[in-house]
Length: 465
Ligand SMILES: *Cc1c(COP(=O)(O)O)cnc(C)c1O
Image (cartoon, rainbow, N blue to C red; front, side, top):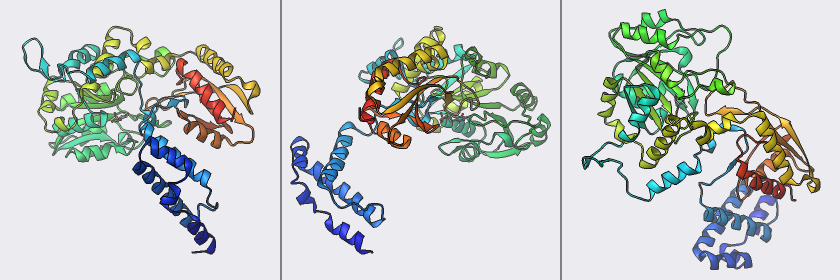
C-alpha cells in the first residue's frame, strides 16, 4: 500500500474518541450510546474501504465525519421505505411503486388494516368464506368473464395458470413473444418454473397461424399469447390476432391463454393513446384465460388478476401454489375500491393513474406556471424555463405512446445537473427527477397539485436559496 493511503488510515480516530464529539454526544442522549456507536463504526468502516480502494483522498475532518454519522442516524430514524415525489413524468414507475391510491382509498385500506374484517367469513351464513369472493363478482361484471381470481402479481398469475394447465406438457408460443418484462421476469423462465415445456414457433418478427397449427401435437396443453409490453417490433412483422389463435386452440380442444400485461377496463384512445384491447375485448375474442397486473394502467394495488372460463379457474383454485401466491386483506381492500370506481363510472376522477393520464396540456401548463411562481426564481442562482416535453406511461405499458406534457428545466449556476439531481433525491422529502438536455427536468404530470409547495421548497434548498 502506498504511503498516502497508510497515512489516511492512521489519521482515522478510534470509535471511543469519536463518541466524545459534542454533536455525537447530543445524539447519544437522544437515541442511545449503542445506536451512535453502531453508526460511527459503520461510517468508519465505509471510510476505511474507500481509502483502501483509492476512492478517498481527503484528510480526516471531524465536522465532515459528524455530518456523515448524523445523516446515517437520521436515515435510520426515518425508516428505509419512504415517500418520494415523482417528478419523472413516468406515471407507472416500477421503481417508485407504480400506481398510487387516492386518499379515500388509502383511508379505506387503513380502516381494514387496523380492524378485524370478514376476509374469509360469510356474514350471512356465519360460515367460512373465501377471500376471493370480495372481488370476483366485480371482476366478472367488468370483464364479462365467467370467473376470476387474484394473486400476488401478474408474474404469479402466469405461473399459477401454467402450473395448473400446462405442467408436464407443452405450451405453444411465438418467438416474438418470449419477452423479458424487467426485474428479470422472463416468460421462458416462468414457463420452465411451472413445469411446462415451451414449444417456440415462428420467428422474432413474424409468426403465422400455420406455425402454431404445425406445432400442435398430442403433448400440447395450451396456446399462449403474451403482450410484448415494453417493446415494439416495427417494419416487416406479423403476429396472429387473438381471435384467430383462440379459434385454432378451440378446434383442437385446447385453451388459449393471453397474458395482456397491463389490464385495461377503459379505452385508452379516449386520451389520444393508441387503442389497446380492453380485457373484455380480449375475452370476447375467445381467449379462455386472461392474466394482467392490477397496478399498471388499472391503477390499483400490486396484484395479478386471472379471468376466464370457470372450468380452468377451478383447477387453479385447488392448486397448492395458490396458497403461496395469495393476496392479503389490504390488497383486496385496495382492489375492491379500485374496481368499484370502474363499476360506478367514476374511475377517471377517483383513480390517480387515470387522472394523470387524462391531464391535458393546458392543465399541465397551468401547473407548471404555478410551480414557477412558488419557486420565486428572481433570487435563485439558476435558469429555470418552461418546456414542452413528452411524458410516458411506464410500467411496461404502451412503450411508444406519447403523452404531450410540460416540464420545468432547471440549469443551476455553478452546479452540474447531475449534482442538482442528487441533492433533490437526497432531500428530506426526496424529489426524483431526471437529467436531460443538460438540465434537471421536473415533469408536472406526475406531481400532485398539493405537492407543488414541497417541490418548490426542495428545489430552493437544493439550489442554496
Ligand atoms: C408487467 C408484465 C408482467 C409482470 O407483471 P407483474 O405484475 O409486475 O408481476 C407479466 N407479463 C406482461 C406482459 C407484463 O407486461
